[in-house]
Image (cartoon, rainbow, N blue to C red; front, side):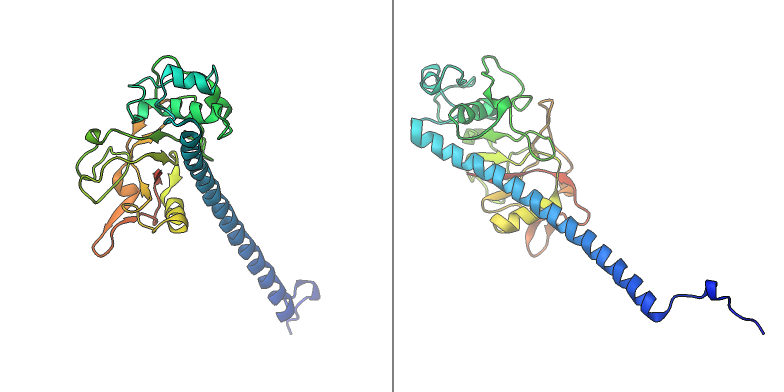
Length: 248
């Protein structure tokens, strides 16, 4: 008769249950860890854009001037290392080319901590090259308060914000920076806004500044999809590498 060697016996039911429990706990821990990482990234992006929002209003309240739109005299009132606007100072608007001046102004005034932003800009340069804050993916964020006539009448590729409303007008905005996947942007949108990329305060933007200062536009469909009932929705399966903006 064939006999099973005692050293080669299989798992008992108790041992098998323990192994399955360990595997389950391991998988659960991995999934929970991924959730915590995603949650931390959401908080980081939200905190960064909210800090710029607070600085934007705080600077205006203290100096009665628009950061990124200062004249030489207004910049001197902050300190000697504060940059004046390079494009039409004191006209009430901040084009994307003065994004670095904006961050220099709020950093020199002490509203944000950004060592690279402290460099005084005296000549025109790429709007988001080396002197802007970066997000958790090492991509620069940007600020703009564009002149209304420079905006398209309806949503279009290459705009700084997506809108389903014609002639919405210009609003100050800060970007999240690029390389943020659209699933993460969808979670941010649900956390601080209405969850939709084309309405309210937090939106999709397809004009993404890169580290070398180039403004690029990734494929729209990678980030936003059209839904017959809901209109525009974030693309999350699979997510694309995208950018959001917070209207201030």
